[in-house]
Image (cartoon, rainbow, N blue to C red; front, side, top):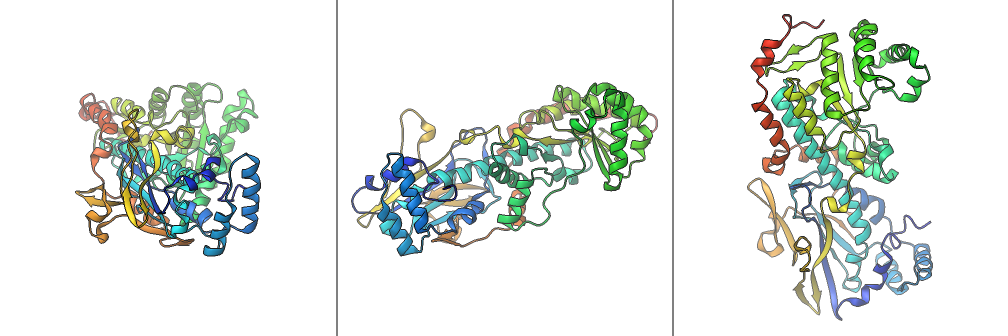
Length: 495
């Protein structure tokens, strides 16, 4: 009831705002931006999903009746004529125009991402009315997409420093977040945002969302994984049998991820995986993942890698880092967050271990540990036209410089490999990077998922993420590739 009714997809008080504008108000222009926060940059994604799911569906007389009943029941004013006017004058579609940065673009924070304005002066109030749902539709997937993109830059740096196989980048971070997120819709929006950067996910709603709203083809891979229920059912004394059963069952699929912390992780890796099942793992027709699911993520990832090397051997790559044989990897999905991930790589690098020895799954740390204030998202009115005259408007509270808003009609300009927000009239229209995407119920530009991926993978200034990779670069001073090479086993062949 009401959850898809755009008139009710608001804060209650939005219904009382229309008479608060000056007499003669004709147009209201507003914009959305990340006002800073934890990150220097923003990867924009998610608006098209909202436009297609909500604004391309007209309101009906039944929607108006329902909204009036619910709103008045709360003791809030409701102007029925406003909505009957939209129904009769615009066939139920909101008379607004929206322009936005092309999705998948990465740009500095504190820049305009979305700008909207009403198209009919009779409905000047429409611009700000649906701020609640529009802002939510932008801040959440964009925040998740940004965290995923920045994680990718950390992994890219680790690969460049310790691996000969940079092509594995898109396979290095798996989305495990479906169960740790607040709703299925969050799983869908956050999941699709992550898939812009990585091709690994178990979050089915995110895969479906990418297909439904962005025409995605095959965007994700997964593989047979284990859970404690199945392994515990065998009993502690048959832990090896449980693992062997999984290896045999999923050999045709070419992948089997074995949980090793059901009881004693170190014993499972050293004695069960490294001894009892050693031959089965060496001869498995594909990849066997060894999955610690508890403990100190920084230590256990490197420890597990070294224990596996003791059992299966390793080679030393051209950069002087040890690499497990291709049939076995560590799969670390416990405690992985944006903040712990670089620490894991620093420790692996310190021990002379290539980062490609482990792949990662991020759950709540990817899709849930964030809110609107993580990147200080806001939507603010910046210009109004009253009686034919445009006025630049803005807020400038003394209590928070961050909340000082932009003024005037805005444009986004590309300059020196990055972007900056400028007054709309200060540049030729063809230089404006904001693209009209919606007007009066019609989608003006439909982004394909491949376009989002292509934009996200363009070369962007390193200062967007320089502070996040600084510790990895500092690690070079503690690790000498030559010392690792000299410590390698006499034979480079896997045992």
